[in-house]
Length: 106
Image (tube, rainbow, N blue to C red; front, side, top):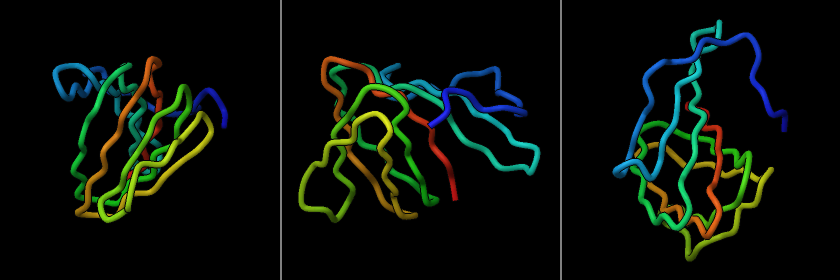
């Protein structure tokens, strides 16, 4: 996984969730698509509800994730990814390190 995204525009205003425990910026591509690049801070336990399908790529750190309907949490280290279906949710837990991510929609 590359550490950069080329030929894009970046939103100036941060997307701040859960009192700042998760912060991201939107990245806009020439074809009109959008991704977010963000971080979930250490020692966070968050639940995200999604309306469109999402692909979450862990670009740094690690986390544990439980997708709605799955039996339990799975570990996702740097370089791993997971998909969440539309109109679903996932729980994400971080340990002593932050989890950095890139989220693709659709």
